[in-house]
Length: 192
Image 1 (tube, rainbow, N blue to C red):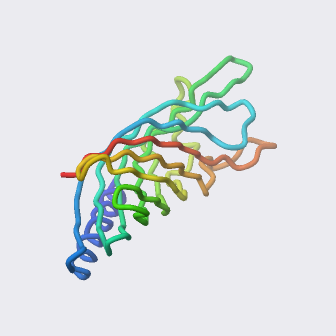
Image 2: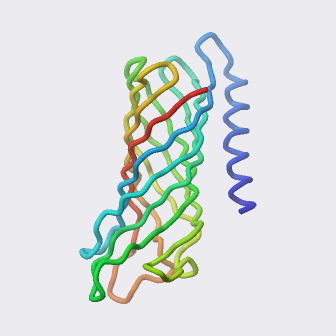
């Protein structure tokens, strides 16, 4: 947990310091909250179906120029999959604190595209009623890409897909490939 708090503080401190160094007429920084729907999956299993979840958290947007911004975020995210096996359908629930850092390019003043890395810290993991956190890696790395639309100067909609780059399991089941997270997120954001 100390690593998570330190990482969050470092991301926001870097963004604040960078925003101060690039102060100019087009430079602004804003903070806000966001939340929305997750459609999560896990790669490598023909028996896996999408699991519906949610995400909620905070973000900072640091405008580096009129068209370019950096947006670090801290999100609680419910992920995983529904697994069909001989026992029926079982929910594989993974809860993460995710820290994406997105580079945003404003195509127009209202429309942006984004791309950036994400690190996730596993908070809990359940397969049905069983706690399986100790069987999984505590960190997850991914790359996210998406599009955003500013409804007003304070409210926005965003769609993002994050592809997992690291294996979520410490040791894959015999005969299986590595398992990665995949998450489609649809968010509503509010800037203060």
